[in-house]
Image (tube, rainbow, N blue to C red; front, side, top):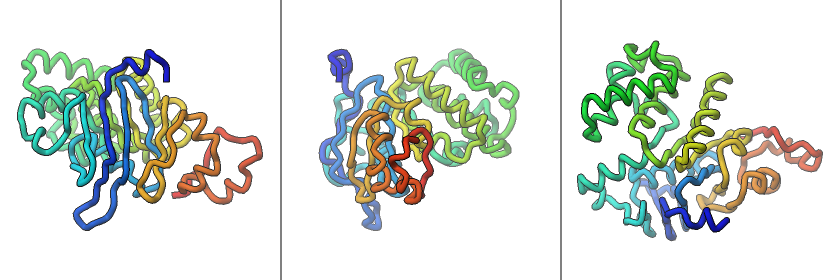
Length: 272
């Protein structure tokens, strides 16, 4: 890491973090992680390996039973988030886009959905209206602003969910499988938008199965094994070129792995 990168302030610091679900199932274990401002990180791993769990820990939705999580230099815990001032300051800075947009869309119209976050943060009505107008234009949603979100297509719902989070102007975006189930045009639009956010200096942490997009949206990749631990931490090139690693963590088809030395490395076949 360059001196300029190490000079960036820490966003998240995790030390020996472990989380178990109420039924006893492991989410993540033995997790040490430092995320600095403006980093673009991708989380890779098979289904159930811990990617989504980590995102929810970083968003303060889950609280680990072991270890310590710090956000912006302060301990992130249930007690701290119960403090209204801390909670509001944290929510201003961190936005979460769920894998299933229906998990976060609930308002009567697209306009109301995008306005909800800024209103909840206490912004003045005039500022809310201006911000919603800007976000509607940015996400090409003006024609849908009076539509109920539940009546939109899957790709439109994804755009609205992302727009609703961006409307709060967070410095950190947590994204869970942002390209999952999208048609090619919407998938391309989401990738370009994430690249644009990175260029704007946002900190991006993205969980994905889509190996083909990693190099476009990440500077660093964390790979989760099926034991819920991070088993690799490197650049996109380092991780994607390690076919043995991708095979071990169940991210490429065994049939494809047999041809690991055929010179092809840009397109991958997932093994879910």
